[in-house]
Amino acid sequence: MTGLPQFLRGARRRAGATVHATPRASRWLLVALVLACSSAAVPNADARGRGERAPSVAGRFDYYVLALSWSPSYCLFNPGDRVQCGGRGFGFVVHGLWPQYEAGGWPEDCGGTRPPDAEALRIGRSVFVTEKLLHHEWRTHGSCSGLDAAQYFRAVDRATATVKIPARFEAPRSVQSLTADAVLAEFRRANPAVPGNAFTAACSRGQLSEVRVCLTRDLKARSCARDVRTRCPRGEVEIRAIR
Image 1: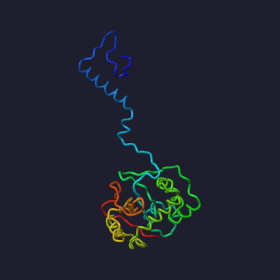
Image 2: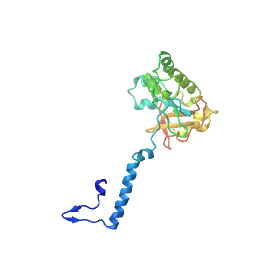
Image 3: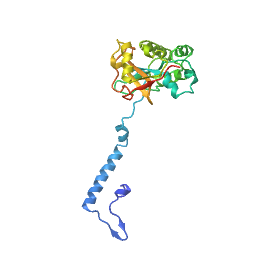
Image 4: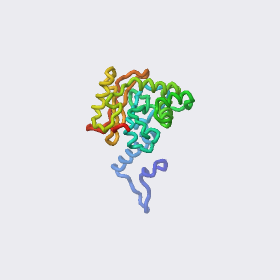
């Protein structure tokens, strides 16, 4: 019995008496022994059951999501960002172009890439509103595109050019209250060639945060996979005025 765990050591001598296991106790001991051996044989069963994320590999993805951020909402919650929020009058700005998996999820931080050189930075600065965002998006998402930095920033620029911003959101000077469905309807009217389910919206704390567009790897509009969906309340949200 010395080979068993402490809690399975059945009969032992206490105070000069031998304690015998009853048939019922023996059955429980057998069950416990089977469970203990099963756990020892499969030490990582819980980790596999949780579906651990596969390593991200550059260039291995199925489509893109182009995220367009409503800058007034960002600035409402990040007033200290003077570069983006110092009265520059931004409306929708590029947040990022994100590789996605058809089955759900996305790669990120693929590594193994060179930092943007001078030419790449020149292109990136014409696309992203801040250098901090430029470097973050390249490191986190661009590194997984299979492109070098200059190619990725050009792809972001081309992707942005495929989407027409509705006139209603070009320069609003007062707060608007709309449902997410109404916002997306405006985008569909402005982009009639784009599949209706290529657009989704994201909201935060009662504010419109982003409109997102699903694109093929060659930057043509396509339907989003099931895990890319609108994340907003059913009621109206605020669309802050441009300042």
